Length: 388
Image 1 (cartoon, rainbow, N blue to C red):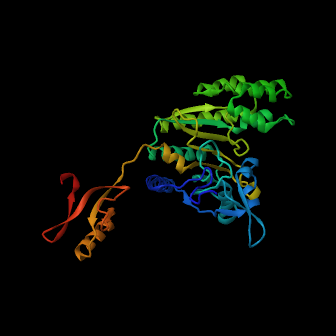
Image 2: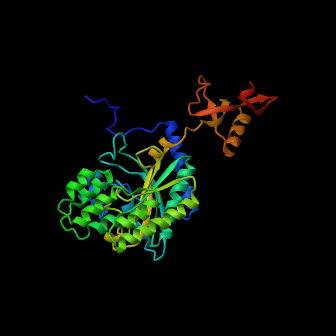
């Protein structure tokens, strides 16, 4: 018999120290997004399944928990990603003609973990811009993403840029191409698999796909791509856009390494243009991913330009430097009116005051009490614990 306190695989409680870090991080990122002019939305955890999966592809279908609504008998899904919901909100509830900057933060649930040791209940933060097709929106989203990671205190970052239009253009004339398998092999840089999968394609396409495997690194990668990839308007536009973004990002974030990886097609079915990932130096797991997905609103009747990013606050919290315990004030428990008034005044002044309940004088757990309230000449006074 399974113990009642055991949780399902890849599901875990968040205990006080980590919960504090995550909550402080959530507030910091939401405040930062608001400073950019983003408006907060809170979509529901449950929706009709067809709405959640509209236009998202097979991968999100496999991640989505499904259940039957006992009120309507219809199939419901627990959201595995918030972007389709935000696209629905932009299309049908806000229905604005101009630019909409929207952000969100809430749990999502995955039927399968993204990777070994990953949680199936990420706390997803994201920001999205609807209504502007120009690179200015891409740059704003990337600036916000990098500023958010800087605010979290994560250093030594690598920003990786790519563009879904390159592979789409190469495979456009290949009706029988095993697209999903080729994209997966390109992302893994599995040359042998790419060679095998491209056997039935045209010689020029096959050579271009193999060339992509070598196109990663600094700004010179884009020049090499122009020389070695087929002359195609969409490929040329993608390379120009990547160069423009790279220049601006290097200028605005000189401490961050900006690189290009033209074979990394993570989220290929999702993104329609520039895509990006940010890594901590030496890590193989991206801290956040984002890009342009102009087709996300089409299923809701408004095919608006869209660009955004999302991250898991739990994963980001784990990558942050260790935080000290929060400073607090220790106070005795008493019915004394003066003491109780002093405690209320300190809390109103944004201080943390931990009352030591009878018999528990030193149990402060998550707080580092560096001061205490003591009675001096019938007045309750703060005293530093370091001097006692």
